[in-house]
View 1 (spheres, rainbow, N blue to C red):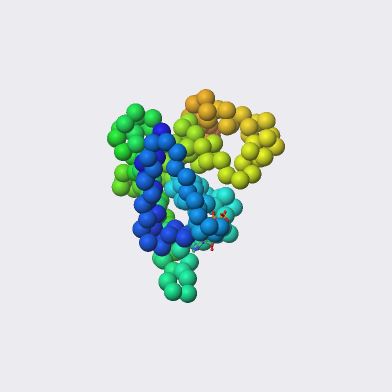
View 2: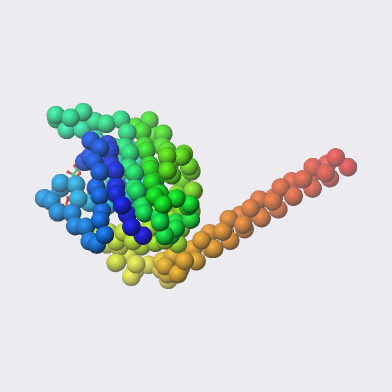
Length: 199
Ligand code: ATP
């Protein structure tokens, strides 16, 4: 799957709108220590729905918003858009370009969009399921990731193989169906109680 470009605004070290275009082949980012190289991969994780502040290397979600410098005032929101080439329909979405956007305000309000249409986080998670790119995917190998895979419990490690084999989607659907079935059974139980009371 080709990541075409990444648009970052107000996210960590990027107060101004910055567009990074990725071509075919390898893209390398070089720069001095602390200049914001890892913040680019954080932006990719974040737009894909990452919820863990630890993974995003901050203490609270608000920390992803540009916090200002002695000469620049802080921003009120952070926004990242990832443009993906979907001509091969690797994502289950019928468009040649899929633009996924996440926006987060200091007030705590947040928004996810797919091709400028507001969606739920659940839709983003489902879009990337089984592609290896999603929140729990294996495409972004950060520092310590290999160690954690090696040390992981075998059940957790199995999830990585399931994602690669393209069967995460089915496990997810099975769990969803089981949850709905349980809910329906609870509702039936409640209904029976009410009926007994009325008789
Ligand atoms: P290294 O080569 O040492 O790994 P790096 O180039 O990967 O460094 P990053 O870790 O991406 O650098 O960026 C760290 C910098 O980002 C720090 O200077 C930190 O102050 C800055 N930073 C992080 N969050 C924010 C924020 N919300 N607002 C402004 N700056 C931020």
